Length: 177
Image 1 (cartoon, rainbow, N blue to C red):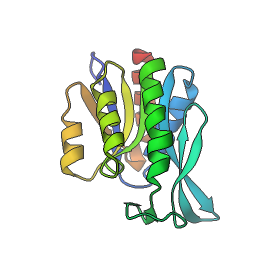
Image 2: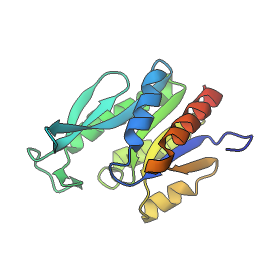
Image 3: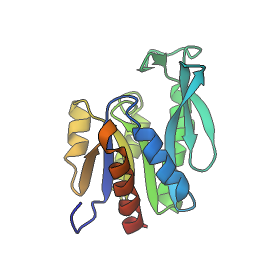
């Protein structure tokens, strides 16, 4: 990781690689100083029924499920943009104003659906506050630009390095907080 800490730390990996769990667990351990949100799969047995957006200050709302009517899709589920804009965006704004670090789950999917979310995301990334985020490893114009931002480090999560990445996240957070 070197001697200097990057302001932004992105955990990259494919779907279901464990990115969210690592970031969520690290954030919840420091939740008095960290704000933002993560996604949680809603399961019925082994079948995913949707995705819930959960803020670090205790709010949650169904973000994506078959019951939502929308043209915007996340994985195979329609997305409730009101959940993103009325729960996710305020959580990021609150973190910008009152917390020492910002957590954002799933860069590379939601910003194309909501200009308000995209603007708030960019405000967070360009602020002086450190950002811990998950990001899709697949390439897109937007995520490629995010990955090139100054003072941004990307760690690629694989099944073989989860313990190492968990430790890197913990050390980075300790250095930032």
